[in-house]
Image (tube, rainbow, N blue to C red; front, side, top):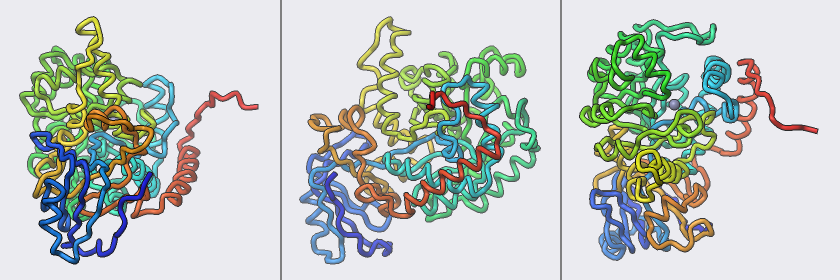
Amino acid sequence: MSKTLVDDKSESVSSHIIVIHNAVIVTMNPQLEVFRHGGLAVEGDIIKAIGQSDHVLSQFSHLPSAQFIDLHGHFLLPGLINTHVHTSQQLGRGIADDVDLVTWLHHRIWPYESNMTPHDSYISTLLCGIELIHSGVTCFAEAGGQHVPEMARAVELLGLRACLTESIMDTGEGLPASWAIRTTDDCIQSQKELYKKYNNTADERIKIWFGIRQIMNSTDRLLLETRDAAKELKTGIHMHVAEIDYENHVVRDTRKVDYGTVTYLEKIKVLQSNLLAAHTVWVNEKEIQMLSEAGTKVSHCPASAMRMLGFAPIKEMLDAKVCVSLGTDGAPSNNRMSIVDEMYLASLINKGREVYSKGTTDPTALPAETVLQMATINGAKSVLWDREIGSLEVGKKADMIVVNPFSWTMVPFHDCISSLVYSMRSENVISVMCNGRWIMKDQKILNVNEEEIISMARSASTELLKRAGNQIPSKMNFV
Ligand SMILES: [Zn+2]
């Protein structure tokens, strides 16, 4: 990969101007404009100008203190947004491959999560963050994890943007004994305190959201009080919704509705525009309409869905104008935390899924521009941050990535949006800027020592699995 970014002097000065020129700029603005020879200027954390390269250069060339960066035809696009990721689960990568869902949850994940120390959470988030940055992510939504203060500490250090959420359950069968069931009051109070302490911290890169792990681990009181508290604090709610058919059966039996979780959430008015519903695989036509009318956002996690959940009706949701974005889910249910891979998978899986409705695959389903919107502007809408991020436009925050297309993975390229979805690998992402600061340059993570984190993660994971008593049978015929 060639070097592009050469000078990093004066980055600590907040009003410093960076002028990027000679780039193919994929704006993801409402007109989906692409500048073939584009330029973009950043002042502090804000995009000040965007347009033809020569024009932008001439606007700032009289400023001797500005830093000029020639991208030599590399692609510049908005930072990708991962709307469902379990940072706490990064140390559990590979602990639950090829097992059924009950084994996955009861015997592998819950023992692991219930034995996490705050330090484990910190290391896990750092390791996850490194992988997110390498795959071009500048913002993510935590799905609900352990020890939010340590997550926040890691996010602040990495330089990422995030909506952090605590894993919240106030009822449920099969939970580990060491994980005492929390009271509803404790769940709500704890999240309100996290909000007070961490919301809008780290240069306003951190938001605190409310979490609901899933309906089978929630009382009605928790659902309703979460709805009201999030409304009062004007923040979002992140919840796993309709993941498996069994969940809908339980909801039908216990909550007396005619279909499933979405129907019930609509009935009790939790289905609102600040709800980010993860997975949302098992929904019928009527429920898709409910999601659309409520303005509820859906995080589609294609790899995780294929592994354990099933085909989500994403094309139908998009046709009904539901805002669908992309997530990786956690390391034990996907193993790869790359939103670049998820873009590729989302397009392929949803083309293949058309066999069910049309009797044949449909190569026109989820075209590249739709998938790139899911990973950028729809991601921003899903995390309630689209006024500031999700596209490259004047006045928005400077969250962007540089992609080098001149490698064997992408050459030749004819349509840059198609090329970004179908050919790009994480390895093509060479530099990442979040909030006006480079957090990766020429594939070097800048704010933490990557090698050191990898080494710490290896030993923390070993110790954690020992404490959790996790037995991972090896499939290898070692000799
Ligand atoms: Zn999840």
